[in-house]
Image (cartoon, rainbow, N blue to C red; front, side, top):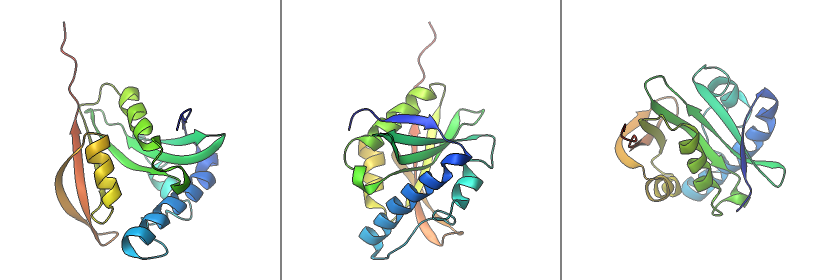
Length: 167
């Protein structure tokens, strides 16, 4: 898909982001777990964004726009150490498998060139995510940990960013 835009999100974008996140996460839960619903606490009522996008100085939320509508979003944590964290990335199921996620990741890397590494966690059962992060974005699985809040195993991924050598 061509012509997507990533724009910093604000509180007024929470309803659209929540609608798309709910659709994306519920689609994954249905596909991988056989359940109608599934996502982190607050994913379907806006509280996820109020907490993780607006609740911390280091977090920056983006809305992904195509055809003048919100089709996805992401939240990044940009830390002073340069060891940054991808908190979430999601795309409306109707727009998946069209390059939106790859373009979004390319935007994130280009927007934060001082980054030394990116880390993220994704559910063990989210097989499509594993493939995407490893094969499309260049991450390496570095471990597993129990997410006690959600009661599930999470795969941790990391991508070291090679910094240009000073001349």
